[in-house]
Length: 306
Image (cartoon, rainbow, N blue to C red; front, side, top):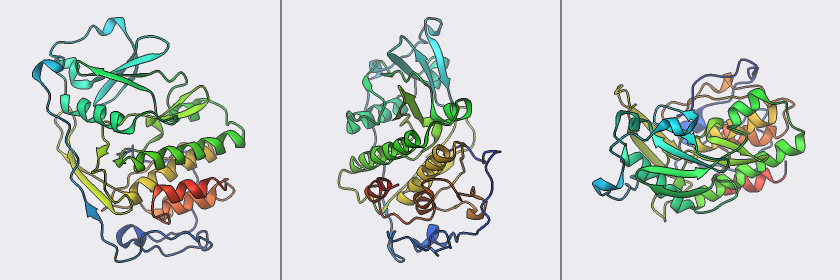
């Protein structure tokens, strides 16, 4: 999940929002949320657990067994599970981290490949070209990721930040309409290209059945790092994804990156969330944090009014 912690520049909420909604789906309204008209899941609603759709089997010759010549590429991103190299001004190649040891984690690449194919073309998603020999070829985002952009660049005018929030709401509504659970929602996985936001990095995402109920879905996966650390559980519901998207909204609106860990069983301490007073889009952000949207489509509709 997202990197733990909060921005050093973020002030802390003075009010205490109940975390009951995270466990029961029935929020306790606070003074900041008392005017909310959109209802989230009702108390007593049960979640539906879905098994992730596995990637198709691969022929042994369809992925790399030998290390590529990294010296011919320009590294632009490196994480626990993957490395991204720029090959020209328009395209990048994404290798699994384990390729450095001479072998590719074919399941990770195949999963991400299938998700890009399920999603197809959308203006809010980074361009996907093909997967060859266990390597994904994607469009190059010429302004880096949103987390570093916020840290390094001056705050854009409010209309630009509003457009970015509306763009993300539209993109996530589309992704859920294609029955994909993003899981790892973080400003680092949102790219900036020519002043527009592009969602990327679906290695941890989950393909759901095409008839999955996106108001009640629940996925739980066991993950482990390439270094062989003890496995940990990754859980995702519409509430967790709305929560993390609300963190991205706050980061854009306040121009101050904020991340925190939250999964279905272990909600964050809501009284430790940043103070949203005076931040444009405050009501939408609080609704995301307090589970007041039944689905991403309802969020998209509400965001158009900020």
